Length: 191
Image 1 (cartoon, rainbow, N blue to C red):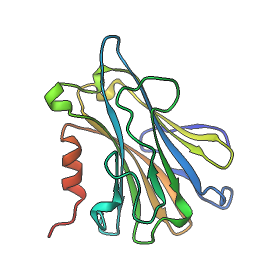
Image 2: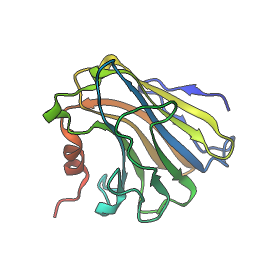
Image 3: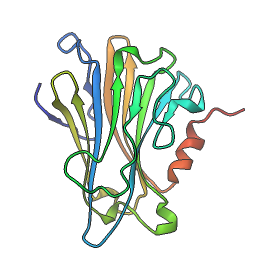
Image 4: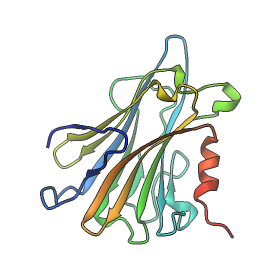
């Protein structure tokens, strides 16, 4: 399957009759900072139930909670500089065995301590998110995070939605300035 460049508003079916075996994927985040700068991007996954909320706190996978309760979403750890080639942060996902209480995976890229450090996506020269089929190491989706978010400190870039016949990737492309805690507050169930 060739790489598909994802455009805003266009969904891509990840599991279908033509691609039924797609199960293990990697989501990779990469970035470069403008010369002389330093910036820490963080990839996070909110595993949401039917009500659009986290079934429990442990279904929020990020640099301080590296594995979901079902073990099917694993964050490979925090890269604080973006130095080096290739993906700077990786999240491994086994779509076939994600807990049935999870109906959606929501992916957010945030800048660590952005408000205090006065950082935003405008400090980046290049940032991307991609999805790779781990069975054959082939990139199946590539999504560029571009200058459109130059004033923002977080980007909700995509959703994986469980449908009757598999998972669908939907780019959302929403920039915010609410901080990662703002997303936690949005997705945590009210008591």
